[in-house]
Image (cartoon, rainbow, N blue to C red; front, side, top):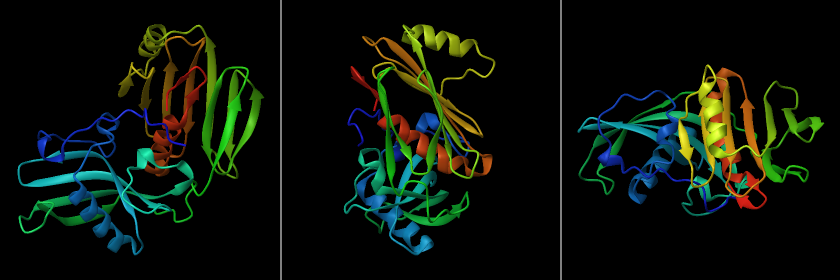
Length: 260
């Protein structure tokens, strides 16, 4: 179940400074849009998808006239406009990754209309999130939720590895004794590819991502262990798996303190 301590980076859509964003800017995840705009996005993407959907916007740019939003489109088994970071994982099925262009329209409650929609990834109607499974590690004091279809491949409690059935997607969690937040962050920044793109010292984690991976580093005050969670996936499914990575991060639970 989602933990209410998930970090929210709340940026008002109309307050966004002009900028150029990559197709996935993790620094701007969890942008807050108005209820009217959320309803407008859900309606427009529902027409494109030909089913009832919701849109999770994680990045945007604004030039004073037009706004460009990047988001994940998903189906939800629960009624109401509940933000995806507060939904139970097994209620969400990821569909695809999209770009939406908005134009000003003062005749609409949202103040904007959807001018164009582009799918940025293939659509996976089955998804991998029709149900989720729980994995506990008693030796190293954590639990997490995994998308359906991930099977345990390596049972070393310090280095747990799950792989999606029939594919190469993998999820691993490594545990380190007495690794504090500053020490783990310093080691990470010394690595050749070290670049923190999302950090929450309050909740004890920082994360990064690339074309084929998503990583979360966890080191909470008052706990014995530090952890590195890594999700590897093919580049053509980046949008889908970064979405899963956010949900897995939110659901990662450290006994003695919750990250998710």
